[in-house]
Length: 287
Image (tube, rainbow, N blue to C red; front, top):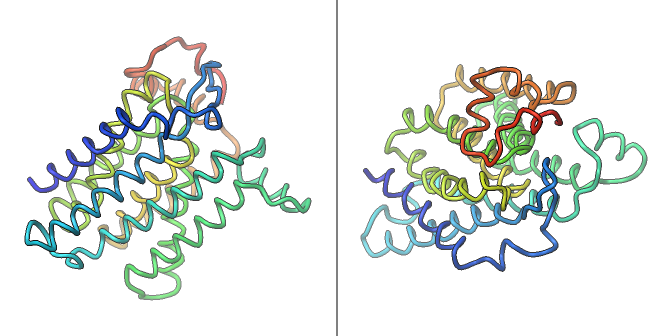
């Protein structure tokens, strides 16, 4: 039951921020055109970070007076908060300063020409954050440390790659979260990530209506935290399987359009368009 409460608190925290913090989201510098030419605002991902911060502050304060876990009892919570703050900051930098360069190749080519892109800053910074997080989980071997770090970083990047259509990355994150929620249960990891997933669900209606989008800020946070949860909770065999899947998907994105693939697979197309303003096939002809 405590996981459900944590999930609901995260949900309500973001709904409150959405209703009262319009100046944090609907500002001209964060306005972008989406795939259909509609104006959307990318700042809503910041609300995920704020929700995690507020919830964790509340947990610490209440725990100190005997309501809930005492501060320091659940080591996963500060790791999730660190991941949210770190990945959120890098994503926000890319949302604000991002240019036309796309994909690993685009950023590497730009760097080879002496130009450091915001996307490359995000990739390098994400790798650094992932290494810190993987190191905090518990050092075994350097191979395991780097494998876990790559898993976390690739999870964050894959979420960014999926944020190309309304609601897509939130839906995908909730699907990925479902087995983690079952495995983690009401344990430390389950309690640590529940507020973030509730917060993501709270943004879904506005995302589907194409008034806002998570942007790199929010997508980075969702992917990074879910990757961290896999590292914290799952067995070595499961982590290796997720590691391979993430590498394959990230590399595949350099050569194929996920939107086109989704549009050609009926179950994926149905799920992707569920709840969106428009379900016309013509909407999904671009990457």
